[in-house]
Length: 193
Image (cartoon, rainbow, N blue to C red; front, side, top):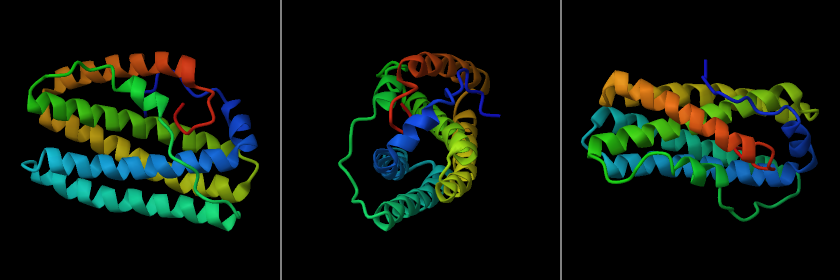
């Protein structure tokens, strides 16, 4: 369903299990950034009323996910660590050229968001199946469903606002590019990298 060209190496779960506190901090900030992305799309493209409405709902949902992750951190006696640069997203954002039309910029941002959500969904699925910590496994199973919905929503909007054939071509090219990124970053102790 997700179309990812390179699945996550299952050994990544071993890295997660040895670094739960770090992963939870990274995950919390991923949720905060997802909320910020939704707000940024509202600010940048207010003329797309359906998108604005969906992004407002998404921002609330993503910040609630941040709170859930933060609650887990606190319940385990930890504190939220500092935000770190997301190498995966930094590399991903290099794919599309800058300086295109507003509509093309919107489509590109929607495709990026869709891919990030797809990779999160895939990783959360892996965590839900493989984590020895059953509480966290159940938590990631619930979030996996949300990420799948977000992935399909962003892709649907990209296809709605752009030329469907062109969007599908760009999507396939972006998926191939992302697979190359994952070859280098796929085993870092972060949600995406």
